Image (tube, rainbow over all chains, first blue to last red; front, side, top):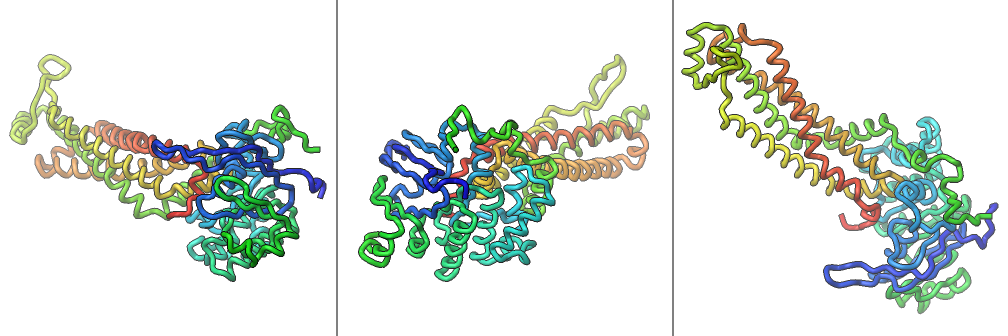
Length: 248
Length: 237
């Protein structure tokens, strides 16, 4: 890869986020600093209500911080207008959701080509690439099926293919295995890992799933709106299944 | 290397305006909205039904008036007495000595009221459609859709529903109006009916129905287009 390992694709600096809940102000994030390297597989772990999802949405440019800055590819996302944000979501970031979120009225192939349509890719080219991507996730022959005709695991694989449509630098996965059974979840994790390895895509995933730890390069543990600890590959092997796992 | 500052955004590196790099061609928008309507056909049918009925009532009233005007214009005194017996009021016309069929204020208000109720019904149905589809809208936003894409899809769908519903309603109302005329006054009502008046009444009905369905969807469509992409992330159904 041409990008050096030290290049931060996402940089979060001093981010806080408060929500108004009626008269109450809840601080979901209380000052987070985090740097995510290009090409790494990063998991964000934490119990519900820890601010995990808030941080995750921030990284994905879906939400803006109350204070602090989020840089994606060294661009402060708070400075972007609606067009630029749409551009960012369209080409820089691929999203994978817990609930798959395929457009129900479209076939698998149409779902995969939709981001390419937004990007102005001609139909033929988009269809060819869409089929290739569906082949990558092993669903090429099911391209004409609607989401309702696919199993949960298959839907998530279509969603993964869709997330890669415009060759994004970052894939954001929000609890990608949350609605899947154990084995299907494992398949999805393996698929994500191989994509990150082979295509050099930065995978950032928010998760409860410990199976995710085995494939992560780094794990960020969030607790109470702050980063509790960041563990690298080496430390992870010790923690997984040990005391660290039981903590959450 | 990648030392892009805010002044030098990587997003505009190709030199084109970013706006032009996120697109949804009209043909594609049409394709998507037709698909949406097809899949949610029975649902759209219910949404359209109130419009069909209201427009049919409007067309029926207008065309009933046309029939009566045609009969009056025939100049036959027998027909004019029949008209009066049937409950039509005659009012002085534009020219001294001439008469025209007066539409009573009550009739007008009933038509206006039915159209208003129908519009409120459309707003309600479309708001529900937006709520039903909030995840889909959020997802499209995550995939790079602009607010205007969502707005356009909703307007297109409502426009097509409005056109189809108004046409159906206008034809039904026209049929009922003409049949009513024939039953009351016999076939002479057909004979004296001016086709241009009929066509104008049909045109007005379709136009009003179409306009109302667009007016009804305006607020829901704006709500939909402003839906934040985070909505797609919410796990609960």
